[in-house]
Image 1: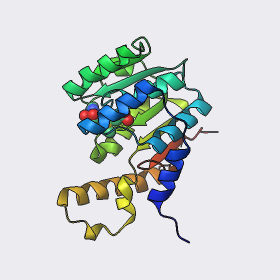
Image 2 (image 1 turned 60 degrees about the horizontal axis):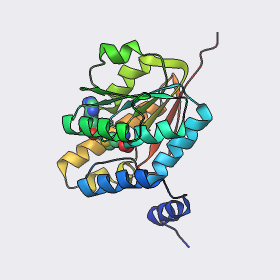
Image 3 (image 1 turned 60 degrees about the vertical axis):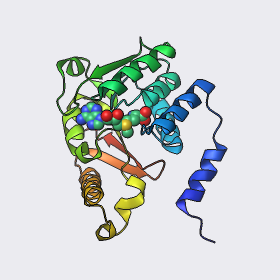
Image 4 (image 1 turned 180 degrees about the horizontal axis):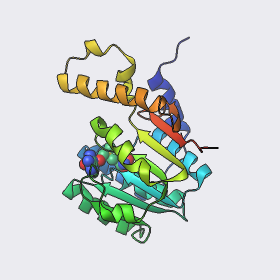
Length: 220
Ligand SMILES: C[S@@+](CC[C@H](N)C(=O)[O-])C[C@H]1O[C@@H](n2cnc3c(N)ncnc32)[C@H](O)[C@@H]1O
């Protein structure tokens, strides 16, 4: 008997505890308005790994409407979250949502393009954890730019590295040129990440694929 990935994901989602009503409202809003937030099994895995690490400062690239930042702040009551969003409407929506959860003291949203590290973001370094969840074609740039701000024992999470499973299939079968290019970029990123000399990476097939990269502590 062969069980497909979708059936497994459905099973895992059904096993999950129900989220608080306000969180489910955010999820429903994202679904209704086409806002790409983390998938249920992806966010649960991220939160579990974060709680094992217990980071005090987290930097997120790609806020959208604040869903994952809010989930991280609720899971880790001692953590401060710094998050960057370049879309003005989403930035304002994120601020509103964060206020409605009364988390504005612990979630700081920066408006701007994360391809340029702002002085404000740099000034809060080092970060104990980095979560990359923005433009998929730019992952390597985000990683290289922000890993410089990571604490020595820091950890980097990257979402969507399996991109609906497309990275694992025959890329030549993908009809859309844009998607094909994106798949190829993500695939390149995965290879680059797995071979990175300073990081130990594991890719978890949860949600849309979550890469977990642990900085190697250099011993003399
Ligand atoms: C997948 S969504 C983030 C979802 C969010 N992390 C969550 O799970 O709730 C990606 C977001 O990254 C933003 N984004 C993409 N490229 C960016 C960049 N270069 N700088 C800042 N934000 C960016 C997009 O506008 C979008 O809102």
